[in-house]
Amino acid sequence: MMNKTPLTIEGSEKLRAELRHLKSVERPKIIAAIAEARSHGDLSENAEYDAAKERQAFIEGRIKEVELKLANAQIIDPKQLDADGRCVFGATVDLEDQDSGDAVSYQIVGEDEADIKAGKISVNSPIARALIGKCAGDVAQVQAPGGLREYEVLDVRYE
Image (tube, rainbow, N blue to C red; front, side, top):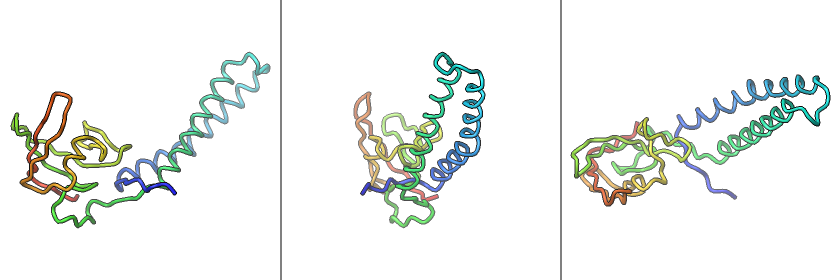
């Protein structure tokens, strides 16, 4: 049995939307492209047909991958968390970089949802691993590429 992979509600909705798009738009489009390429005759030297078949294999593989991710997802609603102010999966954490004084906010999310520009960091990232279990007032030490960084946890929100 596979371990369940944590996923936020937002992350699961994005995967479901991608799955719907792949099945209702991409799959029919590629089936039509294959039929069109087939109609051009000799398949042995038909680059269009080969490309369409390759694209079909990619789409079917992605459909299976997304279905598996959703089947193995443990969907977590950050609003339902009761973690007594601790950093946990799904929490949004306000931090202050102890060196620069810069304030940043990150939500701890699943591997597939991570998007640093959107303030979403993977639960498997060094910073998230350093934050898990910390509360407001705690300092997390993170081994960053440029050396050890320290962040003070200002607030932990479940939103």
